[in-house]
Image: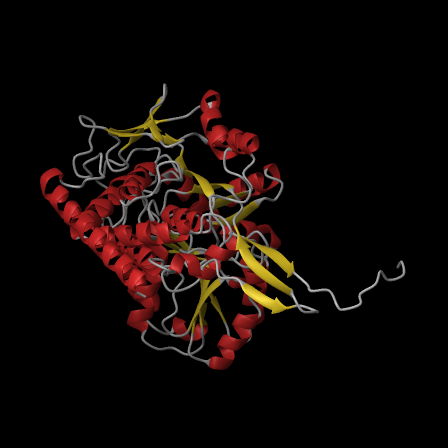
Length: 551
């Protein structure tokens, strides 16, 4: 007991010393981990992003330039690894055995190490100057409102709080079952994969890569991380923060490359598991190339149904606006299609949604650049939808005005298109209507009280099943819709939305054995570990045991 008390006191003292040194270094050197100034990055003062391999930060013979998504000015230089430079990364992954860097039988002190690292990182992210640094850095590369960017940082900080201390080793909790005779017991353990890869998109530059990275590390894996080059500076700075909090330099590799080079690296390094978050097209290619050793969280065409009970029209309109247009619609969970019961047509819902959409402006980034589609591509899709009989433009449908967003990106006012339900279900229209537009764009339709089966048929035919919302307090209606749908993260009730932070619940698709989750103990265990059974059989043998007849 006294030893434990002394260890605890020593740990508390070390933490106080660490915090004191952090506060001192903050006052003298600003942020001790940061190598960039989020506000000061510009064409005249470009930031540089490096790679991390085998414990060393390295540059490259090739530097890729990223332009500011708001004005087109070259403002970040990325040390990009080409196909000739992958060998150090392949070697680094190959040094990690299949049984991982730690497991319940090997280096269990590393579970405690990551509990401490996580606690320190959580405390650092709670410091206003640090959270503001990451919030502004996110805004620079993936423009969204300050509140949306800050929300991403806060969710990440809460995740780190949730998995501090002993919570890391609790993820590796085992179970035992009595055997058939004395001395026999079976034990189930959560086992790491060893060398793994993580590939994440641009839309949440901090939250998605960090939550998956930490989950991989907690379970004993050695990850290589690739983040979309447009936003990779955010995770480079976060990895430096983790190093400052005590993470061993060689535990994580960080690579910047194009997709072709990363694909080559994966085929050569052959990681035991790859986590991919991003486009469905790339996900399907990787699934084939990696022979199924993959977990996926691809973008969904996410739906919302407004039930027959009409209540709180102002609130429902506001949630619809947030779900469809926050972050300029660039969320995996963004509302792509709204099925509106005919009872809602008699309300002012659509006009309220229009008013809310029109108050979004570029000045405060409540609407901003679309990083994967041009303005022309979105308008072309809109015009194709408007050729469907009965369809009409409800609001938006025009480019943003008075801006300097480069033409390689999109700039569209929040847009909604009405398409009749009967036309959506026609085979010639269905694929067009349910094409995911990763921007401020949604389809709205209406259904009558006897047309719910048609709505459910439309949902059954969709390919991706990530988030959904059933906005109703009618229990029988909820029961019918939830019982006949699939989406892995489904919000139900009057306050249901499609976009929610994965801080307090599972977030991930359903209906696909490759589906990955994020944010919860269940998600971490599912994605970053597998089951291993160890059957102990010590004896003793029964008295007077003899060799039995052959069987």
